[in-house]
Length: 125
Image (cartoon, rainbow, N blue to C red; front, top):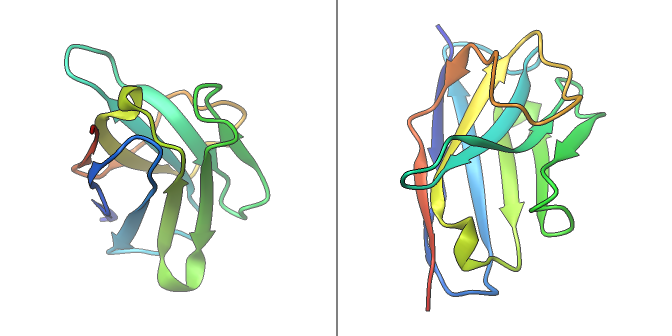
């Protein structure tokens, strides 16, 4: 059973950077697309970014384009989300999801079979 663990969250000032990691155990990520999602208090979960199993296709929500970068290191069984120029509205719990059938044509949070437990990101001065 694939298990995902997010890490790297924390408190950062506006304009700062964080790098989130999504590490897998119990299986290889080689054949899985990975998505990053976030959920702020009182709001629905929203898609942030997606990377295909090969890494050849990525997609981003309009709100993070040009600031966030998704990447993967299959040798380390880990996917990363580099977040730069952070804004207070980026504050949320960030989750990663994995699924074999996702092609990353969008950043929809639906149809992911596996989820991590989330990591809190707080952007505040």
